[in-house]
Length: 313
Image (cartoon, rainbow, N blue to C red; front, side):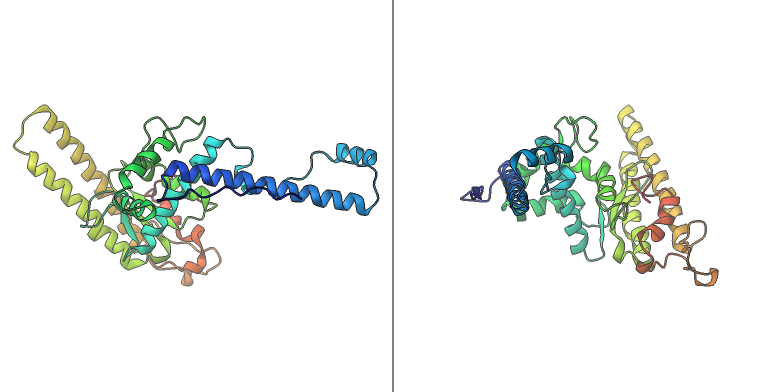
């Protein structure tokens, strides 16, 4: 079998996102062609070993159907180049969330300003500088936004006005749930109006961290809302009154989320239910056992409707 040419990696400085995507897709085509060539060689060897003539081989292949093909990326087999490019971008963003949660001290990464900690979008920009070179995050973010704004029919991960920040806030968790076969490791907990949200690392999200989510992050968010209302209290303009009304709605949403998180924490209405354990063995409040699995432990949060996806498991 003739050796197929290997696509060269761009030389010089770290390339921009467009060149990285082009390179990865060329590699995929290269290895797909290589796999097909190897499969052809295997078929030839088998037919020769059994002494099957070409006319008989053609009859067999016609009856069996198309020759077996093993795509390098089975999930994207038959997808367009635009869909594959988008998927690579989503995998990059998903990896950024993963590293942000894993590197964080408490495994809680807020999507909004609260608790004096950098938001997810700020951490993502830091990661882009790390991956592509210092000072390039703005350039790469613009490229990511351009990829997210392609028009792919039926794909909710992209749209004319989609940005990286929008995707983290409104699409990431659905994508993560699907990618992890409905057993997500990073949970997006949020208010019903989306004004507050945080990604938590499930493996580290114990009782103390749930308390911290309420007392440090959610309270910090609420305090900022109250502070802003106080700043606007002397402004009688229509714009100020509209903003105050919206902020008051955000406060109500934060209070409702806190109420539900307290019920999960104490096991009052929303509790972990382990089917194979007796009533005496059931967890008391939010004391998850990782060995019981995501399907069991995410139950209280799904029942309380405090996740960014309505249906997870």
